[in-house]
Image 1: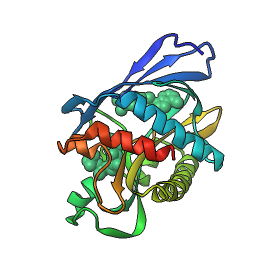
Image 2: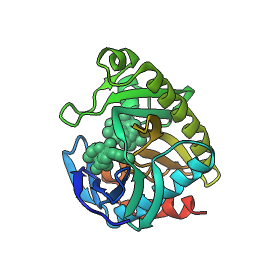
Image 3: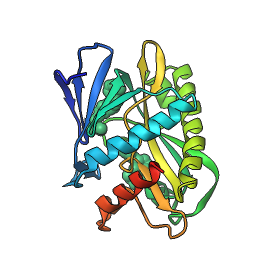
Image 4: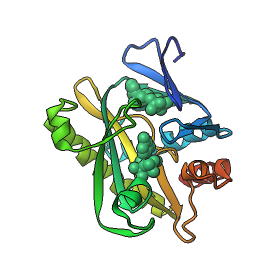
Length: 234
Ligand code: ADP
Ligand code: UDP
């Protein structure tokens, strides 16, 4: 399937139409951004690494009956996906305290949580993705109550499967962000699942293996993504 027309260029990916009106190609770039796009950089080979990591994870989830937009990985930087009407909500799942939760609650990073947390953010670059709750979702019509319920059920299922998947590979799944969309009336998991949108720590040493290495200038960013790909393919 060939790339036809560019319909969207985001911070990390470009979307193209294909000969099939139901399918798009996501092209993964090396550009990295953080802090609402204020910090910019390139992570060498990130596009190919993230495409391979995400494709492997989507295949793994599909094998476990999680409905995703993934169709195929036609090349190193291209993912063929079902075209979605993206629901403008970022669903964050947290198993361990880190990042903005650590700041908001005044609790150190790495502290365990008694229960998994789901947070919702309104997907809006100009507003800096503000945190919202289910009342905002309903009041502003961002999604139907039933759609939100399906997204949350799917997010918890993804968390169970991926926590186990990474644990078997010596990695702790600390937190991650998911996006969902509608395709032919069905809610599907979309976008990507990569170290750009997940916090992944080495189980033994707690070394960070994700975009925090870029955000916090910790060095060895590309090496960390390569290590995640190596483990994900085990
Ligand atoms: P951003 O828009 O945040 O800069 P990206 O550079 O990752 O992010 O761009 C990819 C865009 O494509 C995102 O806005 C995402 O919501 C959207 N998207 C992901 N999967 C699909 C899909 N299957 N169909 C349509 N849009 C999608
Ligand atoms: N995340 C993301 N995109 C966003 C915000 C968060 O992928 O726009 C991911 C982030 O990588 C982390 C999780 O969601 O795995 C929780 O992020 P947090 O709220 O701690 O945000 P931070 O301010 O640290 O990016």
